[in-house]
Every structure is written in C-alpha cells, then in structure tokens.
Amino acid sequence: MVSNGFLIIFLQSEGLLMGYEKIGAVIAVILLIFALVVGYLLLTNRKVNQLEQKLQELEGKE
Amino acid sequence: MKRESAISIGYKSLAVLLLLYTLIFGLTNELPYQAIWEQSARNFFFHVPNWTVLIVLMGISLVQSLRVLRSYDPDLKLKRTSLELDVMAVEAAKVGIMFCIAGLVSGMIWARVTWGSNLPASDFAAWWNWDPKQTCALIAFFIYLGYFLLRTSFADPEQRAKVAAAYNIFAFATLIPLLFIIPDRLPGLHPTAEQGSQLVQLKVDATFTTVFFPAMIGFILLGYWIYEVRYRMGLVQYRLDEIEAERAYNEV
Image (cartoon, rainbow over the protein chains, first blue to last red):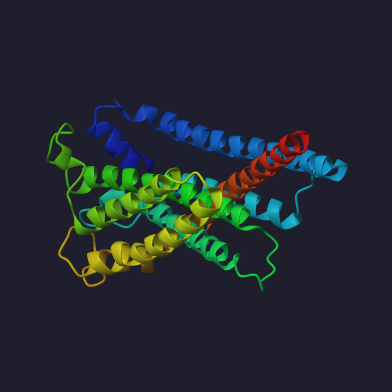
C-alpha cells in the first residue's frame, strides 16, 4: 500500500512529512526529478549529436 | 544533425519505460510482509540496482583500460587511439562512482529505517553501522577515488593513460572481493548467502520479482546511457583539443 511505503515511513520518522495527504506530492516530486534527469540526458544527447556533426564537418575541411 | 540508430533509441526508450514502471510500482505495489525490512524492502528496487550498475560500469572501465594497455602493441591495429580509450575508461569510472555514491546514500537511508530506527537522527550510528559490507563498499569507493586522484598527478597524457589503466585493473580486482567475498565471510547486518532467508523469500515472490528485474535492467540501461553521452562528449572534446593543437603547431 502507498500509505505504508518505505519512503513515507522514512519521511514521517524524520518529521519531514505530516499526514497521508502529501503522499501524492512525494511521488509527484520523485517523478519530476526523474523527468528532469531524463530531460537533461535527452538534451545532452542532442548536443553531443550536434557537436559530432560539427566535428565531422571540421575534419572534412581540414 | 547526426541521426540516432534504432538500437540507441530503443535502449534509451526501454530505460525510461522500465524506470518509470519501477518508480510507480516499486513505490505503490503491495509487498509481502518481511520481518525487520517491512515496507523498507522497497528500497531493494533502488539500492541493489545502483551497485549492479557500478559493477557493470567499472567492468566497462576495466575493458577500456585493458584496451589502453593493448593499444601500445604495434602489431595491433585498433580503431581508437590509447588516449581515446582512456577517455572511455575514465568516463565509465566517473559514472560508476556516481552510482557508488547513490548506493552508499540509499544504503544509509535504509540502515536508518531498519538498523538505526531506535537512535536519534543526529546520531551517526543511526545511519552508519560499520557493517562489513558497508565498510568494504566504502573502501571500494576510496580505491576508485584514488584512481581519479592518481590521474591528476600526471602532466603527460600518455603516461597518465598507462598508469591509470594499470591502477584500474587493480581497482577492479579488489571490487569483487570487497563487495561479495569478504562481507559474506564476516558476521554483519547485511544478509549474507547463509543468512539471506529473507532475501530468498522475497526473490521467489512474484510481486517482488516483477519489479526487481525490470529495475535492474532499467538502471543498467540508464547507467550505460549516461556513460555513452559522457564518453562521446569526452571524445569530441579530445578531438577539438587535438585540432586546436595542430593548428597552433602549424601557425608556429
């Protein structure tokens, strides 16, 4: 059950979470962090592709 | 812009899907009751994969280091130069050490809930128990930290690549005994092969395995994705530096 989740117990034991109404918020924050990580990776991936393309062009000129 | 291959898109999409599945079901699925662990058993889906990714990435780093040393053989014609392989080795180790830190932190939080719940949060013993596995994992972390420190002490890139590659082989050789063999033979808080009845119980439970194995694959793919992006960026930077140096030399 979500209400008994490890994370919730941990946050409650540390006084960081009061009441079960914030459970959804905690999961939302975790998913947001995950989305940020994936977003960062996708952007970096795109940047690397562009740089590799530029490098190929530069090496072609030389 | 350079196009991604189907395999590349496929494994990255799979990583996102598996990790999303792990996050949602790992946090919300009903788990069978486990003494001591109770609901903290959910951390198994995050803590154990971190260490698995560490081993996979340090394994990749080891292979690249071996290739660095082999690249000096004049009879061998490798596609990459020793310095390019060195970039790949160090980037794998960097991502690996990031997962090592994640493993140590997730382990500390788990220790707080299971072994240190009766102690106040301000007490260090609530978070860290000097259990053989914890201690050995910390030693492994410092051994790899030594790899990065060693690299900073060489100005010559070729010399740095060779010495760091040799050290990396030693570092990996210590990783397996430190994470598995030594802790298994000492009494401690972590479940060992003999004491791991709880672990076995969880492993055979379908509700557990349906999250655990996708989590393992998802984390490994995520680790590889970060490594791939980092080493490609490192190789571009290396080539740009080389071109710049060539230009400067030609101008002189």
